Each structure stands twice: as C-alpha cells, then as structure tokens.
Length: 508
Image (cartoon, rainbow, N blue to C red; front, side, top):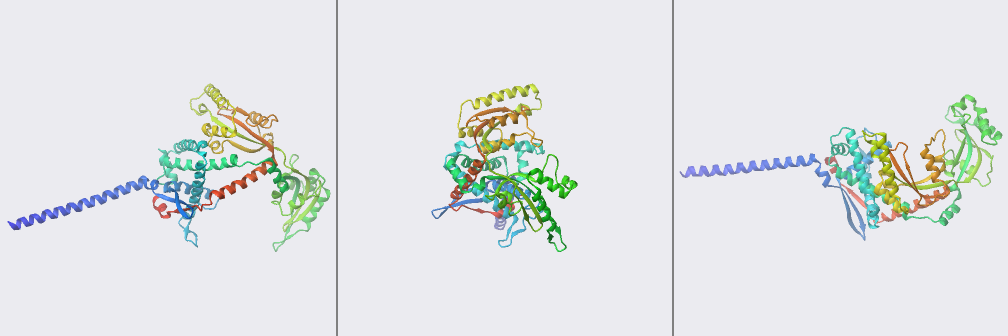
C-alpha cells in the first residue's frame, strides 16, 4: 500500500511539473504572439525614441526632446526624397553600403544624420518661438489639419483603403495620422517662426539702407550691354587657335555703335543661316541683355564685370575678351541704379467649395461666390496692421503656403504685370497690377478679387513700395541678421544621438 501511495505521489508531482511546463510554454508562446502583433501593429516605432536632442547649459547636458522612430522616419524619407531629386543618391543604391570609410557609416546612417540635424534645428527654433510668445500667432495646427485632408484625398486617389495604410506604404511601420500631424505641425511652426523673425522682428531704417548703398554701390547697380562669343578653331592637341575669333570680335567692336548695329555686325560675320539658328529674328536680338549685376556679368566670362562696371565707362564702349576657347566682343550701353518700383503685399485666399462639387451648377457656384465675397469683406471690414492681417491669414486662409508665410509676397516688380507674348495677363492680373502700383496706394489698403472661374477669392493687403535697390539692400541686411540670430540660438551646443539599429528593425 505504501508503494502505491509513493507512486501516486510521484504521479501527482509529475503531473504538476508537466502542467507547469505547459503553462510556461503557453506563456512564452503568448508573449511571442503579443510581441509579434505589437511589432506588426507599428506600436513600437511610435513610442521608442529614435533621436534624442540635447543641449549644454552651464556645462550640464540636458535632454530637450525625444523624437520617436516613426517621426524620425518621416524626416528620413523627406531627406531621401530630396537627395533623389538632386541626384545625390540614385534609386538603385544599396542604403547599407558604406558611405564614409573613415567612420564606417552607411548611406542609411548618413541620411538619418541629416534628418536628425533638421529635427535638432527645428526643436531649438520651436523652443525659441514658445519662449517669445509666438504661439498665439501660429497657424501650425491648422496647417497640419489642412495637409492631413490633402493626404486623405491623395490616398483615396491611389486606391488605398485608409490613410494609415497609405502612410505606412510611404514611411514604414508606425506612421499614422497622429504621427504625421505631429511631424507637420512641428515643421510648420519652425518655418512660420523663421518667417515671422524675418518679416517682423528685424527692421531696417532708411538710413541703414543708404549706408549699405554707400558702402558698396556696385551691388545695387545694373547694367545693359551686348555681347557675342566667337569660338576659336580646335587644334589636334586640344588647344584653340584664336586668330580668326579675335579678328571677328574686333570687327564687331569697330562697327558697333548701338544694339542694332552690334547685332548686324555679328550677323554679317556668322551668316543668315547660323544667325537664325542662334535666335536672331526681326523681333529678337540674343546679343542684347539687361539688368545684370556685377556678379552675374562675370558668370558669362571672367573680366566682363571689370569692363562693364568701370567708373569711366560710357555708352558705346567696346572691348574684346580673350579666353582659352575663343573671344568675346562686348559693348557697354547703360549702367544705372536699379530703382524700378518693387511692391510687397499679403494675400488671403478662400476656396469656393461649390466649384469642386460634382453636382454644382453655374448658378450654385455663383451664389456660393457671392457669399464668399461677403465673408471676405467682413474679414477686412476693420483696418488692421500687418501682424493682425498675418494672423487673419493663419486663421482663415485655405492655402497652406499662405499660412506658413502669413500671405507674404515680396519683390514684385511692375514687369510682372506687363503683357507680352510670353506673359499673357488676365483681366484680373491687370486689375491687380494697376492697384498695386497705383501712386495713391498706402500701407493697409485691401483689395478683394474673385478668380475668373469663381473657384476662389483673394484678399490683397498692401505693405509697401520701394525702389528695387532698396528692397535688395533690405533683403541682404535682414538675411545677415537672421543668420546671426540663428547662430545665437544654437550657441548652447545642441546635439543629437541616433539609435541607428532601431531603424533597421522597426522601420520596415
């Protein structure tokens, strides 16, 4: 009987042991299953840090932001796309191939570095925006919402059952509507604030502009001239015989007194057939150019700027500039300060939704446009300053680019509104040009113009009109200020740390 009890006890213990093993196996399998579904769901890329942003304050390194793998991946693919477009990286390149032999970094890691650097700069700028109270002016959230709507339309157009699936096809696991919105809002705030700094924080007085001109007048002068290149004869050793080319250039120089005679002298030498191929017609003289700067003139050939911008230069002066391949003949016409009027203005665009509805009629579109114009009138019923109108744009515009820029348009010249064969203007363009360049125009004036097809209406807000040289000077001075500001806010030695290996396993 004792033996039977002992055997029974052993059986019970064995059963318990087997049960424990089964429970352990089931638990492990369950954990594996859970881990698998967590992995394929894209949960981990959303919550695990891919890039850590830090800065050093008083010798102490602080973490100022943790960017998830999913958000970093979005920026990775943005950088990758731009590098494809510029030909820096080809479509068939192995991203795991070594890019830098000295460090062993791969092309994937190189692109991640660029993405992390952008995220670092964006984080610093956005902190500055928050610290300086800019957020009350920001339209970054609205920009993100409008961009999400556009992404939804694109995903449907490409046949994806949901926006989530479309985003994951583009950016890998973990990308979702929420993650995309975070990315878009972050980027928009950075761009917004940089534009705000340029447009509102840095002002330049007229005295500063005049001082900039006096310090370097050539930078604000433009020159009209005529030129033509006569190629030398190629020798067997790869050099050029310049004899005939120099002679032809000197012949043109001796016979040219104005643009017409310069062109005629060139045509006499090269012949009618070659001249036609070169673009010479009754209405076109390809040897005549206008509005070149002292920098752009030298892009034609070295030494051209020295001739054209010399103090003693007078109309009709000519010269021959020899190069290794041939000879240029050049004739000076006029040098002037670039003082044509240049306007700066803002826009706020409202879309007529009725115009895009499948069942709309001309009558319903016109009725909706009447309501839209009334709304536009109400938005600017009260006079406002520039920052108030910029805020109005961010809160109401249906154009995402206007939200980022506060509707800002600068450097527009009257030539933009001069009709020609290559610049066909609508009645709307003509009306806008006349309004912008009306001498009675003052800061804060507004104009409401519907599109000719009634698909949208635009509110125009006038900022200023200045000579183009003054606009150029201001742009250069402000750019210098912005560069100094950018260096200042990056002075706390910000840096980033990338979990490179995570992107291999969590992004695909």
